[in-house]
Image (tube, rainbow, N blue to C red):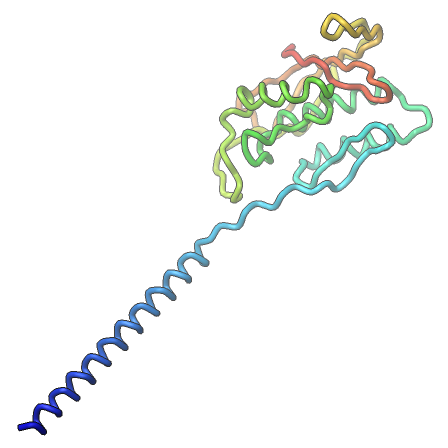
Length: 219
C-alpha cells in the first residue's frame, strides 16, 4: 500500500514539473513574440537636420541637409555674392528675399508646426514674434512627421521671381529709420498649386553688414 502511494506521489510530482516546464516555455514564447513585435514595428525617428554650409564674416547664415535643392542653389549664390570684396547690395537683397521665401513657404520638408523656416533672415528682435505668428497661422496645420510617415500634402517652393526692387525710407518701431531700405516684390511658384500665397513684398533694413527682414506683406 505504501509503495503504491509513493508511486502516485512521484507521478504527481513529474506531472507538476511537466506543467511548470510548459508554463515556462509558453511564457518564453510570448515574451519572444512581444520583443519581436515591438522591434519589428518600431518606427525610426527622423534624423535631425544638420548644417551643411554656412556664411560667416558677420552675416551668420546657414543651410541644412533637409533644405530643398532650390534653397541650396540660392544659398550657394548668396554665399558667392557675400564673399566678394565689393558686394552688390541689391543682388544681396534679392537673393536673401528669394531664399527666405523659399525656406518659409516650403512646408513639405518641415518636421512639425514648430519647425519654422527662414527665421535666421528676420531682424533679431522680431524673430520670436515672427515664429509665434507663423506657428499660429501658416504652420498651424502642419502634421507631425517625426517618424517620416506623414501623408499630408504640403507646399514646396520651386522658384521665386523678383518683380521689382526699390529703395526708400522705412522706420522701425518709430525709432530706427533706414533711408535706403529695400522693398522687394516677388511672386512664388510651387511644385503644385495647393492654394497658398503667391506674391509678397519683403522689406529689408541695414543692420551693420547684414540686411535684415523687418516686414512681409501679401502683395
